Image 1 (cartoon, one colour):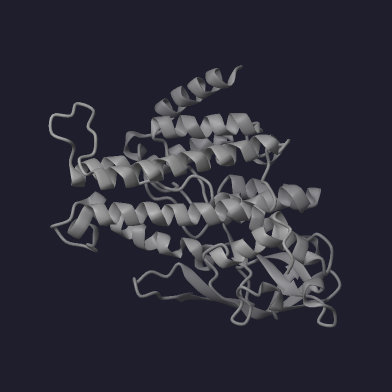
Image 2 (cartoon, helix red, strand yellow):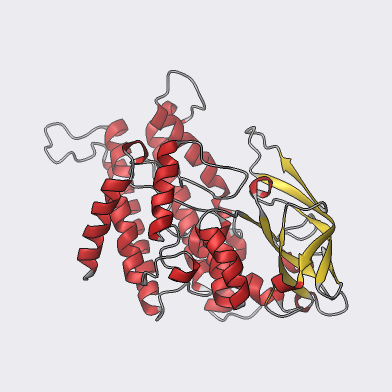
Length: 392
């Protein structure tokens, strides 16, 4: 079957199986896990259908719950979903971070035990990296794991742990040797969040939301079978996982309205122009510049995928993509809010349309894009050292 035929077949299946209520839904249908079950029957039906097709993780091997699609087929499926307006069925750290990392570095037993539960949405994961004294200097972490034979005993804490209050499992960096260079005594372990030694406290933000948490470990247990990679060599695993994270962040962002659409709505079109050309030449110039940059970026990412022989995640190039995507998205949201004028600064109220409030909240949310997943400054350092080969 050609890619064109595959895409047409996928689109037909999606049109038949994606409920009308979800067409254009701008978020993932599910984050997975036992603590946030789906309550909408349409979402549940669509999610189960996608699980059965292996399309929650379409590029994963069939034995782990995927569909075994090639990189080209995966891209064709994503385009078919965009054409139909079908939402992503499953998102989160399981599909974008720990899953791909286990595919590369996990033992056969670890893959068989954890990956199918991610693909079906049965288990949800969180990331145990940052600590109160170890943020950008992550290797300074102090959370300790003591070797007790067939298991580790974990003591310490993590902070800014996104979604920990909904997570079933955590992938966690722990220190297993305090007497060596800081990068050399770190191990990468997996363990359940549902055990007596784990306490989770959501952090309330000024917006009223609590997407981040503090996690405290008091004699928590991680089984030796869930040590990923070698003892004291977890830093290598940790860095590779971050590349998967940055690759995910730099992928297609959730879109509200297109920039040209917003410009035409709020700046108007030229009188008598059948083409709908934006009236204000300054805004028209900004919109064209942004659209050209966005297209060039998409083509660069496509070239990188094609140059990667197996269609997997690039290595240090992910820092380039993460840096540019986060800053490009901030430019986009700033443009949109500026074009909307006073209609772009509302938080609530009947004087604002639903799509206007969505744009404003998206603009505010994207402010974190140059911090989350590694700051722009961190990405520039990685690019300078690992891509350009500049001296320290």
